Image (cartoon, rainbow, N blue to C red; front, side, top):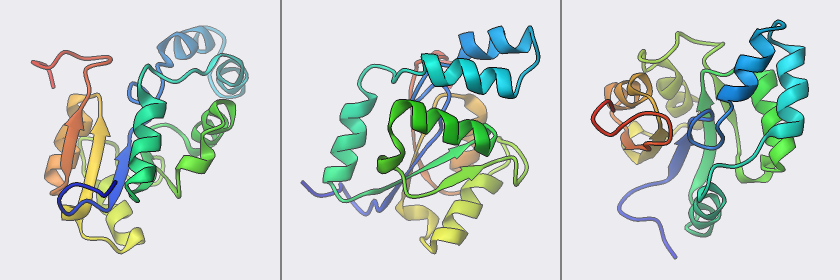
Length: 153
């Protein structure tokens, strides 16, 4: 199976696209986030329905997959380890290093570091800020309605 069109890279957001971690964020924020969140999420992380199939499908197509998320890098690493999903992703881009979405900086950083033009990316997002940032970066975007309605996105 080959990638459609001219796609080479898939940039996944994390929260709301790969997993739903709202409950864990809420629980840990009641007692202070950070280590508590990582402890809770490492026990409770679960893929959203259909995600594993898409990760495998993109991998079979020969597409490189990376994470581009507003989540702190240490939290992303904890989640990927808990999901045993690190083997699907080549790199992690966290907006802890750059301005947050809707600024396209995280997507531009990925394009720059990977040395791939923005037209060859597909971004998977669940927030209007993420969709806006992907479009501003000149990337194709698949907006998923796990946490927001299609109208909102």
